[in-house]
Image (cartoon, rainbow, N blue to C red; front, side):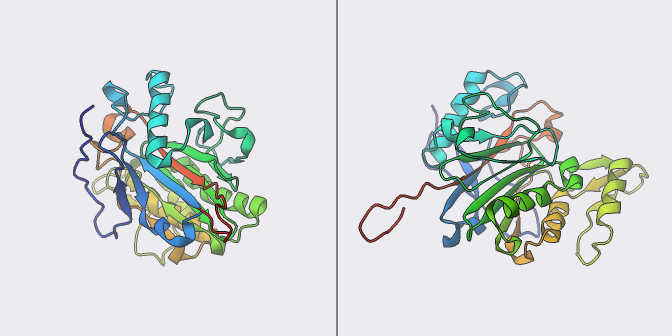
Length: 309
C-alpha cells in the first residue's frame, strides 16, 4: 500500500485552529483530534474524528467508509473499523458501540453489555442519536457526513458523551438531551462539562427551505447577544436560507448550562474538504460515512506508587 497523503485543508475563516491531524504510520488511517481535549484534565479519555483516507473501500466509498446500508461491502467496513482502531490507540472493533441514528433526540447509556454492537455484532437498540458512558474501555461511535458531531467530556465524573446533531436533532436539542442524561446517570454538573462541536457542514454550503429556516428563526431569534446569525436569507430569494448548525449547537449547549469558555467550535467544514472528508451535500448523497470516536480509558495501576496509565 502506498503512503497516505493528506490533502491541503481548507480551514474556516475567522476561527481559531482547534483541530490537529494525527498520522501514526505511513499506512495507518489519519484522524482528527481536537486541541482543547489535549489538556491533562482530559487524559482519562481518548477521542478522534475520521477522515476518508486509509481504508479499503472503493468507488464512492473510497476509502475509509463506516456507513452501512449504502452499498459498501460489510467486510470492507469492518476492516475499516479495525484500521481506525489501531490508529486511535489499539482499540479493538469488538469494544466499539455504534449509534443507530435516525435524527432523534434519544440517548443511550452505554455499558459493558453493549460492546461491539453495530460494529462486530447486531445492536439490541434502535433510534439512538447520542451515546454516553462512564464505563472504561468501551468506545462510543457515531456516524457523520455533514451533520454536526458533538463531543462531551466531564473530567470530574470522568464521563463522556457523543451526539449526532443534524437540523432535526438541533431543533429537537440532542445536545441538551445528552447533557441531561450525563447529569442524571453520572451526577455530572453541566458547569464541569466541556463540549467540542466537531467537523460538519458550514453555513456557506448549507442551504435550507423557508419552512426549516422558520423553525430555527423561532427557536434562536431571542439570542441576539451573539455576533452571528443562525439563519441568513440568500439575497434575491424569499424561499432559501443559509443555516449555521455549528452556532445553533453552540447556543443549545450554552443554554444547557455549559460555560461559554468550555464550548469549542471546529475549524473544518466537511463540504469544503471533499478530498479529506465525506460530504452528503457535496456529492449529492453518493458518499461514504465518517465517524466520531470517544472512549474512557481503562486506567490500570502498574506500580506500588499508585501511578496510573
